[in-house]
Length: 191
Ligand SMILES: [Zn+2]
Image (cartoon, rainbow, N blue to C red):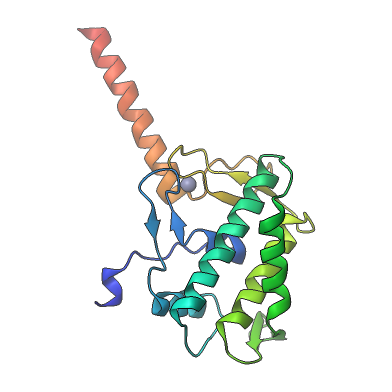
């Protein structure tokens, strides 16, 4: 299989929620965007986290962290108490790896993973999740309005009124279905 046979990535500006977006349509027909270890390696590379390899068990561990971040972010967005197993997993991933932030030549933050392992990369993602779940970063966690998606996203818009995880996917789909519904209603009125 070539990479184009796999579902493409949905990259946003926030690392932790881009990671949770590697599984989409959680309440509909689920799309797993990192189904095999090398797709996780690819996703990490796109995110500036270069790892040498990934085993099946490392992929499973990454997917577990992803679901823990999703649960924690969803709880905050819904103003529910944080689920403690998710918190424990996020913390252990954060503690497990070693990564160092560096200032890149272009003035952007880069990460050096000490051992180049998936474990190091997951520690960066876990730390990013902690920073948005704890509320230390400006913005708010919200849930996508699409009933089949319900992804947690980090809204940094000025008014904090973003409704969809992504305008180009969920937002457009909703707009289109509303348009079609209005059109149907209009047609039935004229009959
Ligand atoms: Zn969505």
